[in-house]
Length: 123
Image (tube, rainbow, N blue to C red; front, side, top):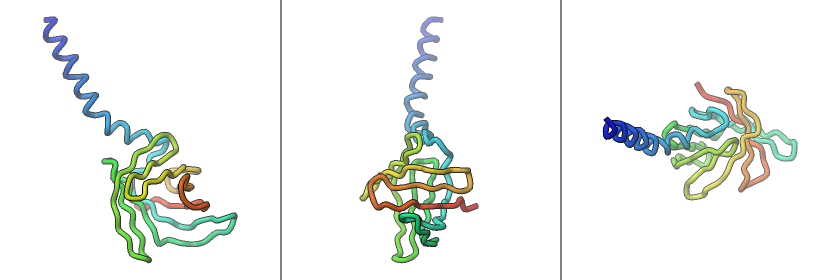
């Protein structure tokens, strides 16, 4: 009986270890999985309307970035820690989520530029 208990405990721990990477991806303070279309950017209080970019965050830890001009279609990995999205790619970066209501979100880059990007969820 004791051997069966140890086998069950080992199996459970193995499942936890194998699921850990997926659990780590879910550590965003907000549910960002889905497609987000940029609506505008703010620089020093000035609003610039721009819907030429989108980000599609997948539950697998992949993100697809698309831009219309110049044409860019790139995929990479991402992870989250609280309100920080870590973009892992050829140009890694960190995005801090400033506002989020489930349908709209704004973030600022902690590594590049001084603007605040505003995005809306695409259905």
